[in-house]
Image (cartoon, rainbow, N blue to C red; front, side, top):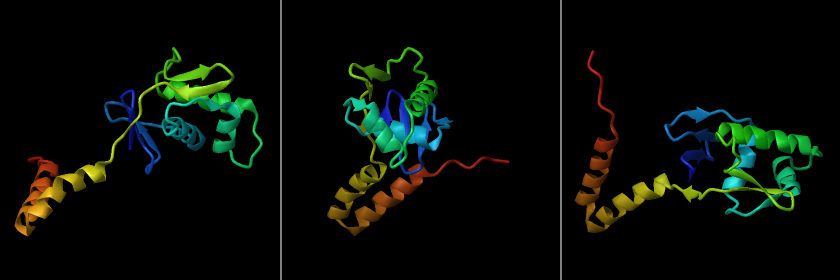
Length: 140
């Protein structure tokens, strides 16, 4: 899971969510371009690099690239072009800090010290985590 500018990018589900958790629909190629931006470490990606990564072994014109950029800006509410920026020299970059969220690693880190302390504490840690993650049931 990648987070940037209030958005969550779930690479496994190929899903972009807004800050309030609403899924934002993206076409597969547009999602792939956003994933590429988010994993590029803030570096400028040339038009050629983007086209080769998003449309491998397929000759496409720059119109396809521009269409994906437009769709990304619309999906991100980036009318002022502050997130997806055109760089001098003809490339683009995602101008936002991207954080990696490792949900599985965080859960593992919570239980790991308890396992080292002993089996009964480990079981308690797992039970506590299960209790916290349960949603309250609605009454009829």
